[in-house]
Length: 283
Image 1: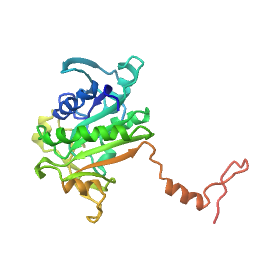
Image 2: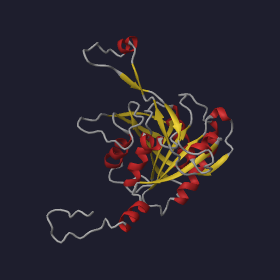
Image 3: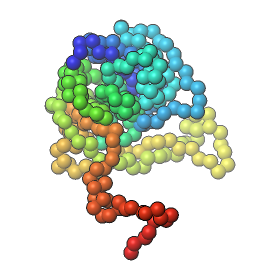
Image 4: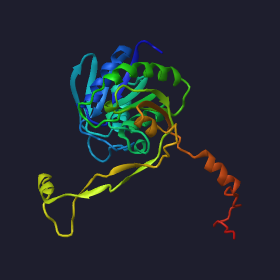
């Protein structure tokens, strides 16, 4: 690994989040760090791209040796913009997103703006790492992340040289569990949310400046996560995270189900139509 990397950093919690500052401080010893992060929180935006409106880029004061910019756009848009406009025709060596306040294990990975940013980087052919901690506390204790992540980072950079389309999802356990028990390469767990929306009370509607409207109701996202992963699954990231392990899951921009595609071929879905205008049906 080069001792002087060009590193692009972003997140989905916005430019002022503690996790972003901690991440930048950890990465500065590895090279030049540029930050292009959302101006406002952009959680659960996945790989969404901000379209249909002008975007505002703001140059902010440096923190240490890191150049910082905010963009009023999604995390994936921040990466796309930075690769197009920020590096003057050059490319960074990698993109790192985080540190997200909240776990991105299991099904949360599908929604994550943190991972949406690194997936955008992976689609551009760049090594990419998303980092999260299992705590929504905006001032969460990240001392063990600071102690462990630099070593994980160096290993992942060494491993990613020939990994086409891969992006890495690193989750740290809750600080309430104490020091992590170890680091594990994991598989993405499964789960779902229940009671996902709740109706705003009249006081809450007033606080949001919402006026009563005939036939209209106001809701906000809420709910709680329910694991669908058996407790016996010793490789699931959500299970390992709950046990106090740091988890690393390799994702890929190619989300084809190759096993299912092979099954469909075996079932005879491949068919030559011989210039027929309609598909023949079989009983």
